[in-house]
Amino acid sequence: MGEESVNEGNFSPAEARVFAKVSRRFLWFIMLLFMVNFVDRGNVGFAALTMNKELGISTSSFALALSLAAIFYFLFEIPSNLILERVGARYWLARIAVTWGLASCACMFIMGTWSLVTLRVIVAIAEAGFAPGTVLYMTYWYPQYYRARAQSNYMIAQPIAIALGSTVSGLLLGMNGIFGLSGWRWLFLIEGLPSVILGVIAFWFLTDKPKDAAWLAPEEKATLVAALARDEKERAREGRPGWRAATREILSRNFLIVCFAYGCDIGNAAALGTWTPLLLHSINKPGTPYWQIGLLAAVPAIAALIAMPLWTRHADKTRERFWHCVLPMALGVIGWCIAAGVNNPPVQLAGLVIANIGTVSAWPVFFTLPSLMLPQNARAAGIAFLNVVGIAGTAVTPLIMGFMKDATGTYTASMLSMGGVFLIGAAAMFLVPRGAVGGEGPADAVPSPAQ
Image (cartoon, rainbow, N blue to C red; front, side, top):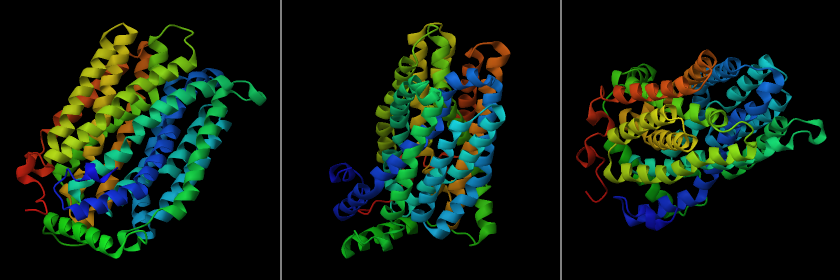
């Protein structure tokens, strides 16, 4: 990210230069970590194209494995984020990347339903805390009025990873029989190794907080610390310090509703990320090559890659959050209905594209809400709790997709159900006062340095 793009915000030229330098330093690396993370999350969907038939795994059993993995991710998410805040991002994010990569590689040894469940649960435990950990890490380096833009710059790793991962996964399935291994076993092995390598690099490359940044000049460090302190002062809220007060803030009505809506969004993201290869395989002609399925699966991700930065940039420019969460979710409902309601492969693919754009565009905006709604002492746990509810969504949607498919024999009801989940999440947001989530635009925004 260059200084030119940063200067469009309401902050001083000196701050713009520091934000640009911070971004150039590590945003690209966080993006790489996210990319390999999403590849490792989504490759099980491609593996299922041949693995399920080879090992006799039913759609419902496959869905159950995904849901159980999400539940264990859920259980380990908040403890992981709290450990990161205690020991530092450099140590903890490095540990997470190395262990999840090794666990993902180990999935090549799946032999049936129960080994699938066991190994996917191990992957989930190893990975727990990565997404909220990186969001918490952003709060150490960027003020609220710039955070959505910064987060979107590495969250675009999701559509990039899906686009590249889909293409590569389709090709890796073609390695079937090399050295006597099935193509899906090669897929798990080859796609798990990059996270191990990046995890080792992360230990030496990341910096925990601005005060530790030897790569910032003293005046740059002072500018960054002052910007963060001013932002914190402007966001300060009265309240008692300590865990009881923090817990009350996190369990407040408004924040719980936001978390629920976010869970609906992430549940849809999980459905699209994992099930798109299976959906495309079902709606295209029998015998369609796996490499072609991979290319088709990359199309929704590429569209989201274009849309998400534009949407989050607009959210920061207007300093509005409510409609920037709700409108993409409504778009997702339309997309699922098109994909389910029209018996035409190109039109159904267009529906999946629309649903993917809506899902991915809302995601980084939701992640700015904890620092907007919660006091400082509640943010670490609040960010983790938001992500935990998102993981709960990923535990529910695979079950819906799998069992609806086995019950009806097609994915039509499954896709309509995902649209229903999105609709419920968007409707829930209307129960939250607009001002609580930055819904009134510039009038309730953070005062700029110039003001």
